[in-house]
Image (cartoon, rainbow over all chains, first blue to last red):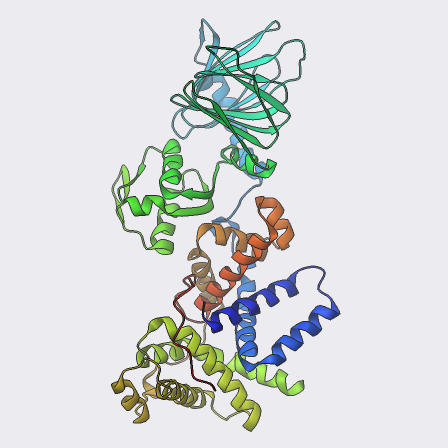
Length: 313
Length: 189
């Protein structure tokens, strides 16, 4: 990095630190000393300070136009709550079959269903789930898609979820299970969850996940456990707020995520573009915003049609 | 101290609004575009030094561009990579200062949309952090806790974000600056 760029970085750090709590007299003196060291320091500092102060007006921007984080559950929940009442009556309950009730959502769907034992299930996009929950036993089959569970406490009757070749036994309360073909991902936000293979050729030790852990299992192969922090695990559940949170995702993986929620698909044809790593928070249906960023931020080429967005280079 | 303060006020009010024109001027007269930001900072430093020695000039614009021209010529003479034509052109004092884009008074509305655009040009992760810090008013520590990342990472992203936003605000492209190959070392000053 060039000397001028280094000076500018240092100037930026001074400005940031001055805005933080805990800025002391001594810090102020140190800054004065740094500024007095050279006019290059002054030039960089004054310039950034001036431009950054003008950016204070950012705060006046209406929240709707910020692409940033929108965590307010209540804001998003209010309209949702109204629709749940209607959906529970009609769409969610597809009827009885051998394994009790079936709950399902379409692409882009998102619904909450209470089970008879008081457990709350939240279904993400394109999901089908069968529940056989009575006073005596509690079993759920996740045929496809993703669901978040808040399991009612009942020590006498364990809550079991079957997903592909995995059996998830609930020892705690809040977690999600996602099934994509034969891949199963379990994300735990609170409490403990046990993951076992449904058919084991020989006895295997159970995998027990605690809060903040994510387990991924493909087919009958071993279950991989990734330790994360609870906030990171919670990010995996941001779909509950209608958001997608990408943390160093490749463009390819981010596109796959969007495609789960939308009928208009993102297709990445350039391998270089597919490998670019990005981060950010998007509403699940904000394909346009995502694509525009790739265009502006990374100079990628985009071809759009009614049912497809192609990233070609 | 008071003198420093008046220089600072003059620099922000009179010199920084010329940044777009100054950047273009440097770009036209210097071969390597990667050097432009460095040269600009050196020119700013010279402008501040000069004003400290001989007082605030009546007109900022000719003063800044004369300083810029002299600095570019000095750099060129010190044997840095520069084409001969450029030197001739510069020493010929044929600097079309008046042809530069006129300064314009930016309305609050325009400024606001410029800010939006500046934000939108940041990579998503960086923008998310800047939004939390600058708009939602979280401290760096709170941003770090909220996103589950280290405070140092937040500061690093904020440094990038601030530089890009300020660059855009002052008429630049607002692109994130990636480390470029260092310019050929200057001779001893």
